[in-house]
Length: 180
Image 1 (cartoon, one colour):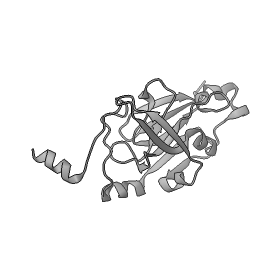
Image 2 (cartoon, rainbow, N blue to C red):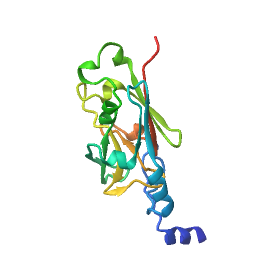
Image 3 (cartoon, rainbow, N blue to C red):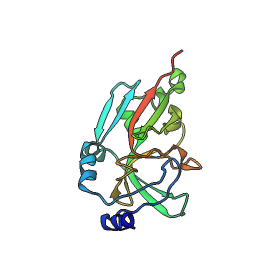
């Protein structure tokens, strides 16, 4: 009973999501959340020309996109906003468009969250000259910053049939060129 009262007082609520976004809790932003948002960084590294370390402020200055997706569990439409992953890869100097050929087609991208959850994409999957993946590095959900165990960044993969490659608490994007 005390736990329920504490939750009510703190204004914390949770929304069930997919297993990969597991037990999603979008909390009312607190001072601790604000501090985490100020310190949050997304690292883009690996086999790139220009490794990146981006703050939320840096990300907010990049070209943005809005995605509307339907929540798998309650069928409600959710609106995410953020930076296309392809834009971040472009800024890191990853081969795209006509340069994405030969050995570059064997490259892959590993996205990892702070909880250790990681997923893989073939580089071609993320290139708009090959397909329109629409993968987004989101920092807001329904107009509010992503907080709690969802954020501050979440990888949204809108065209997958299920959200298994959605990565919450996204912290790094690593580009890998396989060895011969």
